[in-house]
Image 1 (spheres, one colour):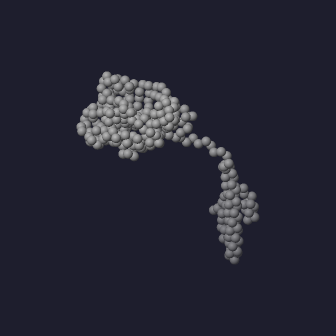
Image 2: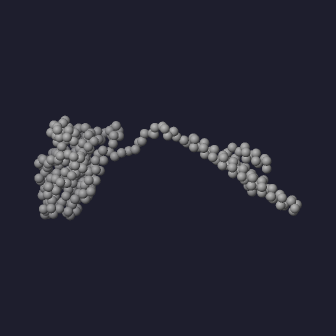
Image 3: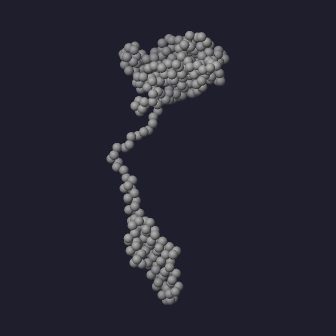
Amino acid sequence: MTEWIEKIEKADSPAKIEEIRVGVFGKKGVLAKAFSEMKNAANEDKAKIAKELNEQKAKLNTLLNEKKIILETAALQEAMKAEGIDVSLFAPRSEAGGTHPVMDTMDRVIEYFSNLNFSVETGPMVEDDFHNFEALNLPKYHPARDMQDTFYFKDEALLRTHTSPVQIRTMLNTKPPIRMIAPGSVFRRDFDITHTPMFHQIEGLLVDDKGKVSFANLKFILEGFLHHMFGDVEVRFRPSFFPFTEPSAEVDISCIFCKGEGCRICSKTGWLEVLGCGIVDPNVFDAVGYKDVSGYAFGLGIERFAMLIHQIPDLRSLFEGDMRLLEQF
């Protein structure tokens, strides 16, 4: 027994303790062997031998458990020490991503009109002449087509120049009333500080029975929307021309940079143009087969809004992937 006590005291790892346990308590261990040899002892000595073996067994078991706890605790402390961190050090830089300012602005616009029960509709980016132009009161050789700078393919296929074709497709497939917005990418052959070949628009359309839609309602909706996006700004409507609406208007807000006093951004006018709108032209309803209805439509460029909200001077920087710009958002 003394030999095994010394081995327990000298053990330096939980693995060594397990080895000793098997040597003492295993099926072929010293205690099992000692108990098996009791049959050779005299009957009057067996009780005394059994008592001594059980005492030794209990003592060795206690010593093994105590030593095992000590060694496991020491091993755990060493592991914790090796894995420890200095909480006083600066944390590593977070590389969490964020929403692109264009997509963030689009999400805000969609959320606003969705809360007014406008459905969100989508359509193909490659369109035909009918949906992109003719159904929108832009017949062939109409001078307003020159404003679009269109990318054409063969067989009259083209990249859509606005999201208005989604409105046409929705009206062809749905009966009024309609209350919808159409967000998405559009394409035009233009590239400068305020234009890119691909950009994003959201256009809205509301159609109902004749007499139920008015310009006053359109004005109310858009004023609330612009206050939601830009805060406490003044809003004005200027007469304009769009082939698919009549009457038509362009909508301005008081300059958010100079508060309407006049600066370089607003060309000293105190106003910034932000979107177009109007009452849907009857020719558009004729193209989709609608009778006895009225409606209004509006459209805006998402990049234009993003530039104003985040004060970004060059539209092209939104598409260059410069991390110095994008990390600001």
